[in-house]
Amino acid sequence: MDGPRAGPWNMAADSFLLDSARTPTLRLYQWDGPWLSLGYAQKPVPAEIPWVRRPSGGRAVLHHHEITYAIVLPEFSGSLGAVYEQLTALWLETLAALHPQLSSSETQRSGQGNPSCYQLTQRGEIQLQGQKLVGSAQLRRGTRLLQHGSIPTAVSPWFSRTFPGARPPAVLPGLTSQDLVRNFPRGLQRQDWSPEEVGIIEENACAYRA
Image (tube, rainbow, N blue to C red; front, side, top):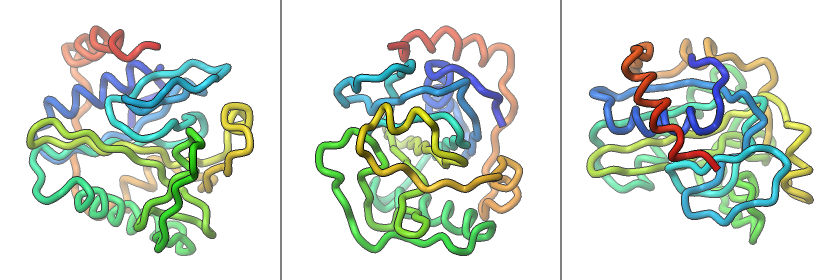
């Protein structure tokens, strides 16, 4: 698992992994937060904390007390929606082994105009007692696909200040990256970053700075 990093570094690392991974790859990481990430086409959200623009779409996510994941598939078949459902089902299997009370959403909620990702629920997303748990987004480049997302372990005190009136995410207190690696049902690999890779990521991070 990568240690806490600034938002631009994390987004540059995910983008680099999308371009370079040769096998299906899982990356787990954290933020030196709090940070706000916006979808690539999303309008800026007034915030008192630093923000970064993701290479993927979707709505805003407040990254603070959480484990963030990125999965890269060098090749994939089917629609983006089908792959989203498949990967979300893998996460449900992983997390339900630790917290059996988790379930898959059977309804869809638009959240109207609220900029928070956690106000939007799609069918099949992971929830806890009716609250959305995992917020994810995708990016495709040719035959390659990135899906990354947030698994909160606590609600950040910045959430209500950043998204007034918004419903906070569900949380899994005590969740660790070791729990996820041990229970993930499919063998995904990622080697530690080489010095050369770190240099490339650091150079590209400037493209994601606010």
